[in-house]
Image (cartoon, rainbow, N blue to C red; front, side, top):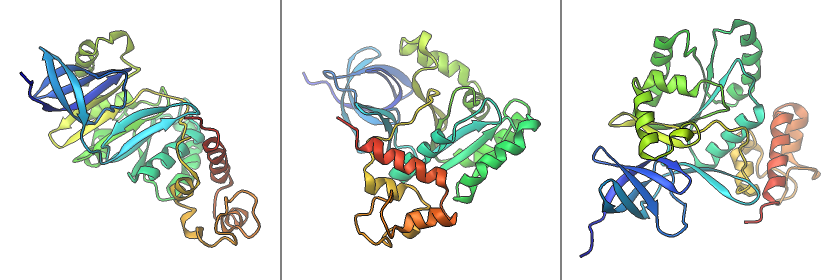
Length: 298
């Protein structure tokens, strides 16, 4: 007898093991064979195989898919997200490279990005941090300042309106305070984390897998592991140049229609870099990403 398919939401992923939620029940799920193309946030059709266990048969059409990639493989971050929060802090130090790469990834899939500056209570480092973030603010990316530890209520008041009716993924380097922010937005999330870890049988890996938490019936947060690198090897030149929003007014105005914006004469992008209308740092990142794109082997 054929078992009926049921639709579930993937709320956690660790290797090729997934945790799906169906009517409030957590179900350990696996894919058939060695496929691992499922992401947290995916709606999937599953076949129950035993109590609390199932096989993922198919993935429903995605609205968005956010992932990073290196020279050899891709790493899915989350599916169907509607916005990205990049969490940075006054300390420890953060890298502009990771911020810009995350912004490029968001632009490439068409989701809005916000920068969340945490630990504003560390007053000595605040002016310098604001100065570093001014570039992104000038590009039109909202910057929201919070202090999750010192001002939890204000942090909640600042961020809760932003996450309502959204599926938000939080990314950032370790130590930026993502977990503290999620704890403020979803009271009792520590209990949910332990429950998910236990069900996924990965208690000792609680900080190394991506997981989704419901804020309410219309809103959810996805917490991702802290990472230092954000490869974008999968983006080609056309995708990259459009993902730098400050490049867009100049696209189509270069002397050569196939201009790579690196050293070509009559390049509108390079002229904008010379005049200061495009940040040299951002252009250097574009050149680096273009180089990486040419190195992929998968």
